[in-house]
Length: 578
Image 1: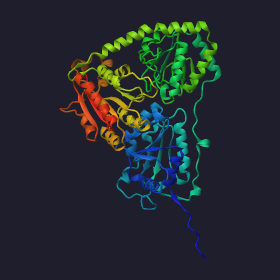
Image 2: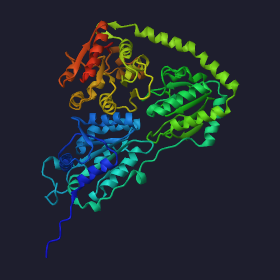
Image 3: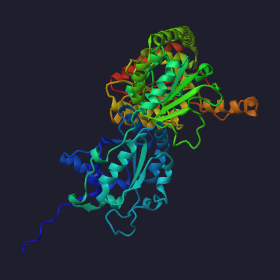
Image 4: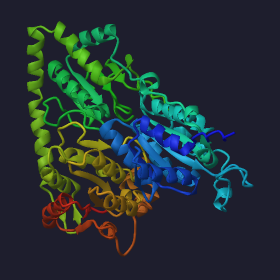
C-alpha cells in the first residue's frame, strides 16, 4: 500500500513574513541577532522564490532604526516594523519608543527572545552563551510605559492574527507604538498552511476618530461668531495635511490668530496673515476665546491666561492618557480628528455669518499687519548679525539655511535651545515640510531624516541639531545607513560646545548659586579636537566645518550639491559658545 503523501508545512517565520505583508508592512528596520535565524532564512527563501516580503533596512544601531520608522510614519501615516535583538536591542530602542509615543507615531517594535528550551528539545534551542544572559524576567518592562499593546507570540498558528491585532492597535486613534516578542523556537515551528488563517483589515482593521458631534460644533460656531480676540494654540495638528488647510480656512473666516507652541509639525503656513508666531504669552492677556487643537502643552506654567477666557479643546487625545498629570483647565473637551472637526466648524460658521461678521473679521485681520511687520523687522535685524570668528549667531546661520531651501524641502528641528532660531528664521509654508520632537529623548532628528527621505525620495531632507544631539544620534550608524541605503540627508550641527539647556535650567532655579558664581555647569564638552564632519566623511558623506560668517553660504551650496549628487552631507557650524 503506497505511503500517504507528506503534508506541506512551513515555519512560523514564513507565515509571520506573510502576515507582515498582509498587514501592509513595507519595511523592516533591523538590527539582527541569534534570535532571528529562522526569519533570516525565510527572508532569503522569499527572495529566491520571488515571494513578497518587507524590505529589510539594516541599521547598525537601534536608535537609527526606531527613528527611521518614526520619520517614515510621520510622512505617510503608516507604521512599519522595527526588528531588534532580544533585551539588548529593545533597551537601545527604548528612548526612540518614548519619542514616538509622545509624537503618536505608529511603529511595531519586535524583539526576538532567547530560546526557552535548554537541552535541545526543539529546533532553535539554546546553543550559545548569550542565550543564558539575554533572558530577563520581563523584557517588555523596558518599553511598557511607551506602548499601546504588548504581546509574546505563543504559536505559529496565530502568527497572522497576532500581527493583525498589533497592527490594528498601532494604527487606531490615537496611533502609537506596540511591542511584540518572538521566541526562537516558536519561529522555527512548522505548520500546514490550512492551520494558519489570515485576518483581513476589512474585518479586523484599525478604528479612526471622526468629527465632533453636531451640537458641539454648532455651539463652538456660535462662540466664534461672538468672539472679539480668538486664538488657536496647536502643536501637532499638521500631522494631517488636510488639517492644515482646514485650520487656515477657518482662521481666515473667523479672524483667529494661530500660535504654534513647541510644534512637532507645521500647522499653518507662515505666509498666512493669521499666523501669530510661537509665543502664547503675547496674546494670552487679550484672549476671550481660545481653541486648543492637537496640543499637549499649550503654554508653560509661567504664562498667565485670563481667568475669564473660555477654552475649547479639540484633540485626538484630549485627556492626555499618557500624562500622569496635565493641569490645563478647559471648558469644552472633544476627542475628534481636527481635519474633520474644523471642516465642519467652517461650514457651521458660514451658515451663521452675516455681513457685519465678515466686516468685523476683515478689520481684525487688518489690525494685525503692524505687529507682523514689526516681527519681520525684528527677525531681519537678528539675521543680519553674523557673530564673529568661531562664534556665529544661530539666527544668522538659520536665516542663511532658510534662503537656500526649496518650498518642498523637509526640515527637522532638533535645535533644542536654538529651536526658536530654527523656527523663526527658516520659514516653511507647506504641510509636512517641518517636523520637530514631541518627546524628550535627544538624537532623533538624523534617524527621522533618513525615514523621511525613504518616504519622500524626491525632496531634500535637512535636519538641524546641536553638538549634544549629534552625540546622542549614534552618528556612525546614521551615515552608514545613508550610504548603504542611498538616502542622502543634510545634517547641520550647531556646535556651541555642550548642552546649553543644562546651563539655562540651573540658572532658572539657582540664578545666584555657586554654579552661576563660578560658571561651573558641567555642560561643556571639552576636548582638543571636535571634528564631527569627519564622522560623516568616514562613511562617504561630504563634510565641512564653518567658523567664519563668510564661509557659510558657499558651504551650504556645496552641501546641497552633494545631496543632489546622491551623497549625504554634514555641515558643522561653530556658534556662540556656552
